[in-house]
Length: 100
Image (tube, rainbow, N blue to C red; front, side, top):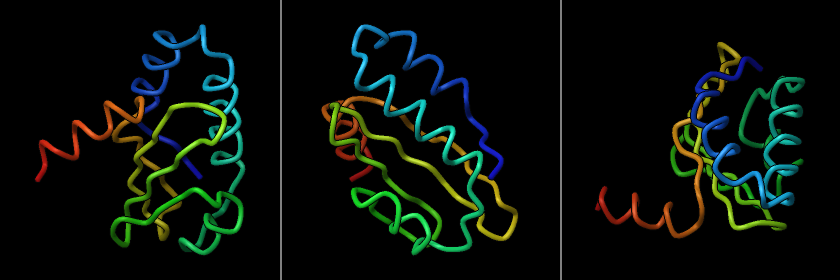
């Protein structure tokens, strides 16, 4: 998959690099996403049990070894992933509250 929106990911990693678990989890996700050829959410769900589909093209990844949420939009047909948000669970809850 082609992953866009890496500036958000890099900014988050720069700010949270002291938390090695979060950094390792996000870097691992990025490597896997780039190597993947996801055709549907089922492909994601098989590998990432903590992934949640919130609509046909948006997925939230939660990482068990850190307080981190990653929201992406996926075009399965074009094999493109767009990072929309990366942050702590608290930050994620705040953006959800703003959208309500």
